[in-house]
Image: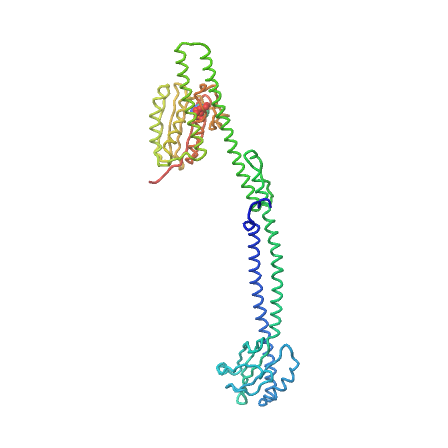
Length: 477
Ligand code: ADP
């Protein structure tokens, strides 16, 4: 996998997945086999116990025929089963107090201590089975003890046992098979796990390669979705969305840079031409003075533009550092109204403060002042003498709605949706050559967004415009 280039083997995801797979597989196999082993062993012991019970029943039948001649019965019984190889029978008959009455030949050859306590605790007709490890013998024995009594006639304990060789062989076989099967399963499991891990991770190699290929120069490229609808497809979609956002930002940055160069180039070339013309022949001092005053105005304009651009770039990189405090919006608007009143009056415009409700919002004082200053300034700027500008504030559904209405030149319908774009001016010819930058409303829009609010405009050409800013209210103390 090319995405694994330079990744240490043990750090690779396919290796880790395989390892986990093997560990899980081995642990599960061991648990299953151990469980099966215990179950089989339990089943085999149960079978032996059943067999011993059957033998006991047969023996008891023989005893009931001649209850006193145990030795004879045992001999006869031994004779009947002498040919048995896998389940040889061992018989011993004791008095209820533990005294041995008769023993089969093979039983005599093994050491099986008499447990007096257990014998005493046995009721008539009761029995117990136990597995006995006999010294010198590899195979343990299973012995069933049964108290056989018939009223006054007799009261004995019959112990009947067998070797557990067959069970040992079966379990031995079973274990051998397991021991052979586990490595085979392990090898197959490892191969399977490895293939599975590689298969499920192969799209990641594609994603890594494709993502590596995409640089600032080919942000238009997208990763191909596999249409499988799985997590990796979601990852591809998420990456594509991220690339789209990056592409958008890049486009905006290049557009912005191009716009800035364009906006600066034209007035600077004009200034240069004017200066060259001025210097082309000697002129009276008055003319130089006038030119210098104009240059200072233009340089002021450039300074403002640069400040606005710095502010916008700060907004874009989230470095605006807003200081959010509770602000009485009604007071802020009243103060601005007082400030702009003088300016409006000078232009022959009436600036009216309409209905102003009390409304508190959470915001950055400087930025909110800048927001409303821009809008009111535009309203006064684009309203001819004799018109009026009305400011109002009212609360509406959790929002403080500020309305700034003017009776100015208005905005053409097709321009309304563009006026918030950077460097957009409705009609360059209707604004003086260098006074407008077209940045004010884009700054306003950013400020409103940063305050989780909205800004809307309604306008009728030649009749006036109305800007409405809605900001979320803060309630309580
Ligand atoms: P500027 O900083 O040049 O004023 P703005 O971004 O504030 O630019 O405004 C963009 C354009 O929207 C302006 O060039 C102007 O044509 C138009 N505009 C803004 N406010 C008004 C208004 N109240 N009346 C008419 N036109 C307006």
